[in-house]
Length: 277
Length: 250
Image (cartoon, rainbow over all chains, first blue to last red; front, side, top):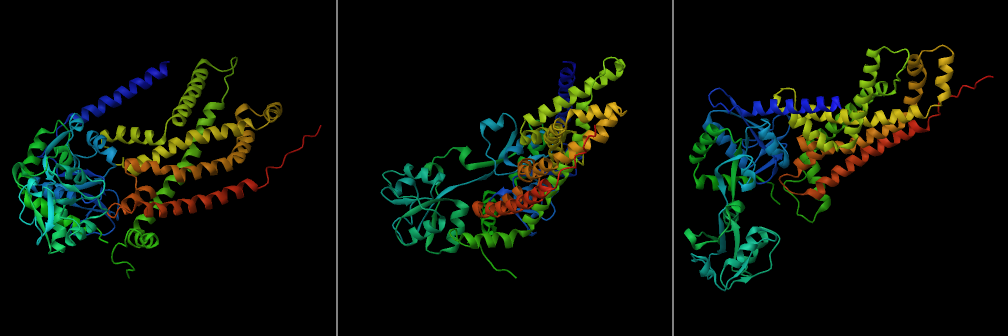
């Protein structure tokens, strides 16, 4: 019985110690480095590679393993803006929030969406990426000058199997919802060969496809002319400890220096660097 | 020289495997080395620590001769070892890894890396299992041996260390070898705290191309090779002749 009590006391002590350590705010003036956690296994946001490059940074504590992707570029830009040295640690998805709370890492930049559930435990910055849903059509087709979803009334629209985009098709009035296809390569072929009138994609994906195929064209929507999506499905944010309010402000300020166009370009470049078939 | 400039199409299973091996051999080699390190350190370290645990567990309290202090110490040792074994055998290693790594991480000890935490957890975990193995080894030794030793003038601890333990350990060796095989496979769960073992190496190798099945097929072959070879070594150990029985002369 006494030992159980002693054990409990030890546990309480340990928890208290960790709580105390956790209460210190991240000090932007005295800290020299910032530790970012990500999975290193969530392309195109972050992935591992054995080759070092301008974009692929070394993973902390894992010699010979480098990490590349959209998150890595954004993390470098943020660290540069804050004047801190960037250290990147690979942490399992489920371990990211515990590692943040334990002080193992200072930020999660891992393609994480700021859900209400997660926001109870951690703080989130403003979004650092919003995937814009666009339509891709043939430059010579009937929809080349469409401006809103209602212009696509009656069109044959297709998307990739099992994606958010496939679910969005039905928002188009009296649409002809085609059987979803396996890859974006097939979607491009379908539209180029007039087997479909349009497909839905995230902007960076659409950009990289249009770059490779001059017969295709992107239709972007303004205001309420486009698809209705919930933020949780399309935005990602930096997660940090709730007490790090100063750091949160600094990160939001750093993010404000990177325009949407730049972000989309960084994402398109990351998609290009991913191994291609 | 590169055999594959680009990722082979999805339906080319063999080519994808060759591509992964070519591009990510560094990951796989590193993963195998870390997995071996975890298993060797875990098993050897667990064996050594389990001896202490076994000593704590097998000591008997002599009601008449032991001082109060000795009795308390022995009793504490007893309780400690049984709690230890119950806790470490009764919880999954993946849970232990989470508690140890993230429980100690807030202290910001610079040496407390995922690998060190992984080595610690696998060692502590294996200790509990090997302690049970050795205990059953001790139970398998005829009680008459202890009685004979005591009657010929050995003290209890002399008899334990010189006569019972050596035989019990020798008989337990194959089971300890099996623990090593178990460790080769089970250390995969330590990837959850970021240890770059074979499992995580494979995850990393497939992180940008999503050829999960092909990647883990390679991992399966490597695990199989490791466990097969170790299994052979263990059965060679098993087939060795048991210790010669000394015939008692009446």
